[in-house]
Amino acid sequence: MNRMKSEPNASIAGTSRVGNFRATYKELFDLFGEPVESDGYKVSTEWKVRYFEKIYTIYDYKETNLYSDELPSVEEFRSDKNPKLWGVGGFAYSELFILELHRQLTLIK
Image 1 (tube, rainbow, N blue to C red):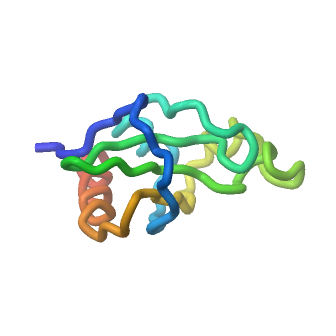
Image 2 (cartoon, helix red, strand yellow):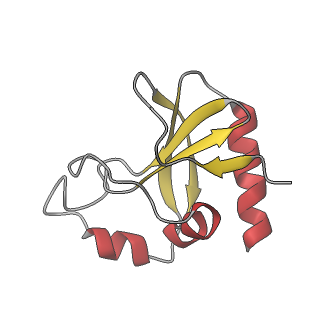
């Protein structure tokens, strides 16, 4: 049973980084579908995810040319087959969320 659900309209006001993990864009896309619109500057890709009754975000941070011309384009970043470092945002650290995220990602491989 997947307890993680994409929730694009969830409010994330007041969340902050609570962890990190590595995955490819494709893995996250396969798990959560289309990302939501991001700030278009420091973040190019973001998902809002409900895990039990809490909301978390999964996002890249300063990884594309939206932030610096020296970085890959959003398309290059998303098509890269190498796992990237993704931030996890939330209201409080949750090791269980990150462990479940890793578990779900291994199931789709």
